[in-house]
Length: 112
Image (cartoon, rainbow, N blue to C red; front, side, top):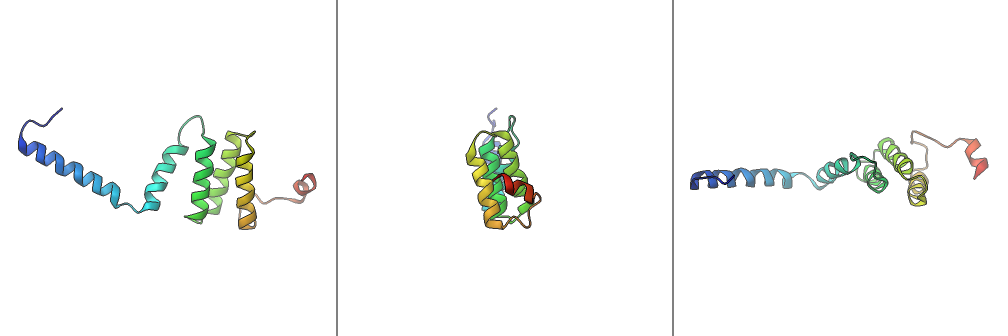
């Protein structure tokens, strides 16, 4: 519905500008996280979105627990795609796997 008067058009235009400025005023990391959350919230789960969000959480937020959970969700979402397992392995390699919530135990190492 179009505003009927020039005042309404001008007023609506100012509100739109303020809303756009609010969105732009967010820091890039906050904006990225907002969109990552939207992407990982869809059903069925999107392994690529989960994996990229995990990398964001690891690198930008230094949140190893949340990153690991998202890497594992990506693997669960597409278990036959080795790309997501490789991303998780890279995460473990670079973080040492010491501070993660699912440390490897010795029984898994025998199977590798």
